[in-house]
Image 1: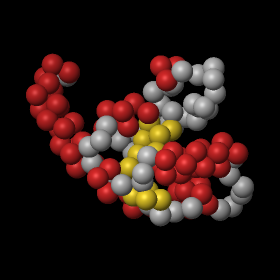
Image 2: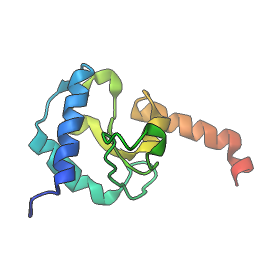
Image 3: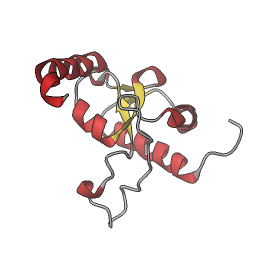
Image 4: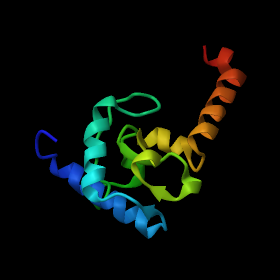
Length: 125
């Protein structure tokens, strides 16, 4: 890395690792590796819709889940059945796309989106 990452990225990485450990995931990367992953991928935006990802401190008592900006950064497990947090199984999504994806893996989610587009394509166009 060329420079020290912003404090929010360090804190987000720490919280993400702790949250996944508490939910029973195998964490196969350290905080430093997750920080590097976020730095490398943040400028590309959400991996699905492409929106710019924003950071919102969701641990603040002033912010409730319904106050979260739909484009806040969200770490997604590509294949949740794998139950592993590692570089090959994570992607950065916006909160809205991650909620939509739910517990589907990447392929299931893409198929679901295609099916919706086929079914409602003319109505949306």
